[in-house]
Length: 258
Image (cartoon, rainbow, N blue to C red; front, side):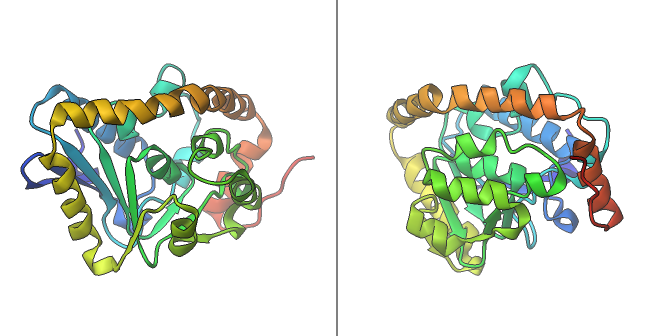
């Protein structure tokens, strides 16, 4: 596993702290980073003694979404269907709770982590956005994944306005997606403290309790996510899907087709 893309610690018994570690790219999702995450979650699932996971970002950003270079390359599914595409997301593999601590910008594909989390806390300075359409991509998975956590009008505005609609951590706290606002300096410590409380409870009871509400997501949200994934793939051959990342990489305005 390319460990350089991740920093993994065990700050307390049963608690694993994972930091996305591409700070120079605001922890953008590269092929290496996503592969490392999938391998880590699989290893933790097969192991024993892990009762709660904390996920955060190293540096100024939490996760700025897919790396522009990754999007500009020849795009192909990461695996078989939606499950393969999202295998970097912890909750799709792990059977223990995940606490996500958003320390900075959370954009695009980074929204998968908060949509999938069992508990989300954030620094007061954190911001959230979905820039897919601004770079010629279809936001087909993130909006439905957030449907049980945010009002549809908020999701629609964020998805359609792209990079020009940034939501603050306080706004998402008011809406219920973020459950606690923390000073940035104490964010990770607070996330670990929450994870310690979770890890101190009956592991079997925690796992069963977690399954009870995730069934709701599986039944209501997952079908829409799978249809959205089909829309994403159908759009890949469109010229705009290549033009958006290329324009971002070249630091120029995109030229869209009609």
